[in-house]
Image 1: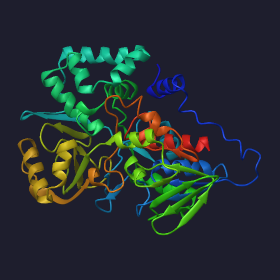
Image 2: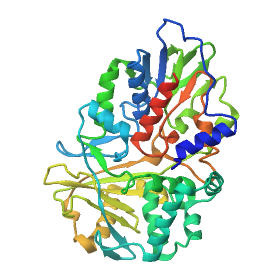
Image 3: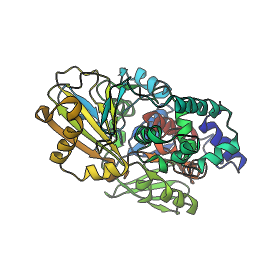
Image 4: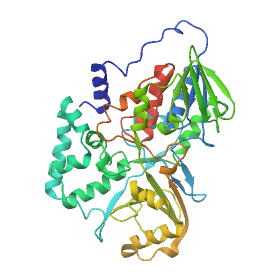
Length: 449
């Protein structure tokens, strides 16, 4: 089967090879150690730095935040319980993060769930609900036929949103409502905004649980910490916001704090919003600027609630709902404690509304949603933490969202190198929103250097 990564390379080569940068032979015989500045200490930047250091390249990472990890944001709710306010899942097929965890002596444990459903006031436990038989048959046929899609058909699909494609293929009524609820949690916005090719490719190429399989023991941020130790923490400079980049025979990187760094190459791993705030000399090509302006990021809100007991009684509990608290899941699965954390996960406009409310409002809304099925749990709530990625000052969203006519048109432009700068980040990965994709693109940029 031709994956979307392979197909985009085929399309790009056929249209002029925009993904294949011109070779640079200047330093091929030089004994001088190369210097590389990496912008961003998220998983992409850390993976790039780790690979380059192992090749004896001198790396410096510049990070705007006061922490490493980027959009991987592990948070301690108690001394014993760690949750993820950012990147959550490691897929069974995510080979690189599996390998790095093995190398760093980090344990991966099961983080799969059995989905309950709350729809039009009716609660159905896991295993007691499904799509209609007719739609299941159609969907399975669609996923099977994906392997035989022609290049032309894939390009046509990319120009249509996922909601419209589902409707055109016979999905309606309750089936369509539930697909909208479930699929929007994957993409972070309504499926009316998602490329139908990007959607079907993800579902056809991913594992049975859509790569929602595992998590790192102690928090996903543990991998960032171990990578930083291998790279050398002195090489990672926090609170260093890049304000200006000058590229001529070499590069100069200017930071808001007055520091200036010279290097041979740059790897820029930051989200497109942050990239636009940099003053580039010479300026970025107009088509890249247009692509930066066009790409949207998902609005996702995570509201974590610490309860004094796990009243949901199922370690693998999650629940999709058609109410304002869009999706619930057990955020402390396999962490031993009498207490537990439920995370209310909302997307799109729901996320934007919930983010503006008080903890008291959210606690009331969540309790009202849960009460018909679990009783009044308000007295068991001990603490709350909320993070809205739509307001994040560096990304303005959780992860990239490829809309209609963007996967084959916008993404190659964003990936294309510019002078001495190579680009990486989850927005350039095969699938958006996964730590694996960030790592893959960081290592790919390191390979180019």
